[in-house]
Image 1: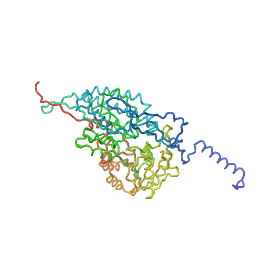
Image 2: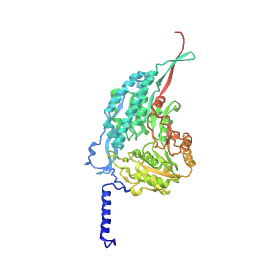
Image 3: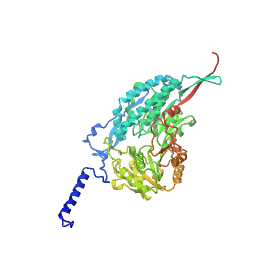
Image 4: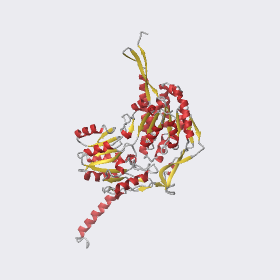
Length: 547
C-alpha cells in the first residue's frame, strides 16, 4: 500500500492480476516472444539414445558380386553428434580407404560384366531385370529401420526426414519400375512409315561411374543408380565419405540379387580413386551430384569427353523474392521452411532472401519470430527442425561467412535468441541483415542454417542478380498479383530450371523434371528423363514387303 500509494483493496487487485499473469505464463498459455530452450549438440554414454548408435563395419569391399574382407587402411566414420566426455565426434563405423589398384579392380569387374554389351546383364530381357529389381526392393525394405537409424546418426536427419528419405526412395523405385513395365509393353510395337516397318528399343550405354551426395545419400544416389541398372548398364558407385554407411548396409542385397560385376563399390579418397577410372576412357556415363569443380575435373580427365554421357546435379543459390503485394504470413512460412529444412543443406534450399524495402519492416519481425521458434536439437527429438551439421569443416566455413558479412555491415538480427551460436556442430540459425554484394554470402552457396536477407527497390535488381550469377537452379516468387507473376515466370524461365509461385523451392514430386541452368545442372532428373539419359534409342527397321 505504501509503495503503490493506493488503498488496500486496489493493491490486492493489482497483486491478484500479477498472480494471474504468472499462472498463465507458467501454463504456457500466455504468448510471450521468448526464446525456446535449445538442446546441446553433445550427449554422454548415459543418454537414453546412446545405445541406439550403430557401428557399421566398413572393413569390407563389394567387388565382382562378392563381399570380401578389407585388411588395409580404414578411417573412422563419425557422427556430428559429440561425445560430452571427450568433446569429439562419436564413432559409428568405418570406411575402407581404397587405392588406385582397388578402383582398377572395380573397373575390370565392370568391364567383364559389360563385355562390350554382350554380358549377361545388358543382354538380359527387360522383364527379367525388372523382376530382379522388384526383388531388390523387397530386400531393401527389410533394412528400413537400420537405414533410417544410420541416416539419423551419420548425417543427423530428424526421424521424420530420415523415414521420408527411405520411403520416398522406395516409392520412386516403384514408379520407375512401373515406367519400365510400360516401356516393355511398347517395345514390341512396330510402326510403318513411308514403306519402312520399324520399332524403337532403348539400349544400355555401358559403364557408369556414379557419385551420390551426403545430404540425400539414399534418395538422390538411387535416382540415377536404379534407372541405369534397369536399362542394362553396369555401375561403379563411389561411396561418399559422409553418408557412405547406408550403402555398406545394402551390399548384401546387391550381392544376393545382381549378377557379378553389375554393381561395384569403391570408397576412400575420390581424388585418388576416380581419376584413373576416367583416364582409362572406359567410363561411358558420369552421374555426379556434388560440386562443379569436382565435376569439371572428372570430365577433363576423360580422354574422349565427347563420348562421355554426362549427368550433373550441382550447386544452387536459390532466391526467395518477396514482392510488396505478397501475403506476408504465407511468404514468411514458406521462406522459413525453404531456408531451414534439413538445416538448409539441400541444393533446393532458399539461400538468399530478397524482400522489397517497403515491407521489410513488416516481414522481418515475423520471420525472426518463426526462425527463433524452430526446435534446435538432436535428430530423435520430437519436432526437431535444426540438427548438427555432418561436414566437419562446415562450422568453420559458416563462421567465416558470418564474420565476413558482419565486417561489411550486416547484423545477426536474431542474436538475442542465440542466432549464430554453436554447440558442437549444432548451429542455431542465424539471420543476416542487410546483406549486399560486398559479402561472400551474397555469392557463395552456404549450405547451412545461415539465412542472408537483402532488400530491393526494383525487380531489375533481381534480374541483374540472376543474370550475373553462375547458379541457375530455382527461384521462389511471393506475390498476389497474377500479372506480375506471369511476367516474372517469363523472365526467370531463361535463368533457372524451376520458378515457384508462393511456395518454397523444391524438387518433389519426383515425377516432375528437376533441372537447372549454367553451373547448377547438366541434364534433367526425373523418372522419364533418367530413362532418356542412361540409354540410347536403337531402331530396328526393314522395308515393308509382302513377306
